[in-house]
Image (cartoon, rainbow, N blue to C red; front, side, top):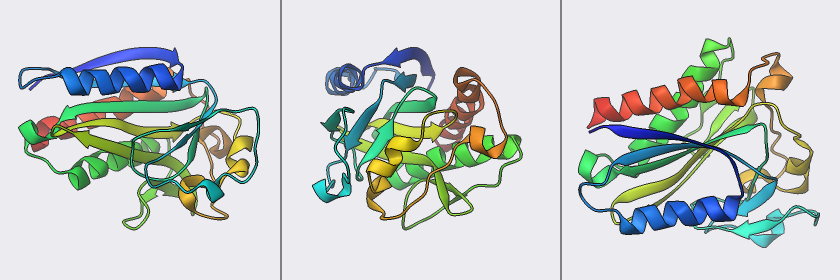
Length: 204
């Protein structure tokens, strides 16, 4: 089962989210799985389980209530966002397996740049020395996934201080640029996406 990879460039969050929903709701058994590579204009996104108290400071950055799992997070240029529009029912994989695929794609990519990252079973995402560098959030409809991962590369991290990232008070975030790795976000996407695609092909 081939996977189409689409580089969507920088996109407004709301319009991209609607495109994901539309694709998922209109797809059928023959529709291709797709991976979208995106960067978003500055936006806070609040997951289905999101609690308003995790937004600590009001700013001019919009807050969007979205339909992925998890709590509030922040997107902006310089952060790699990879959306996985996958028919997991057709591939015979579960949600937890897909989360692991996304986490391991980030961990393996970071290792290529000499960074040791880990996943936490109780708090999905990827961490370096306790600081969060990558997030995962998914939604499943009709046996198909959308949303995906975000990996902090070279962005203004200040707005993360306006929230409890992913609902965790005092959680610090980091990024590749702060850890001595300087790479363009579209180049960072290549090993991440290849890892996801290879893992999905191996599982199904």
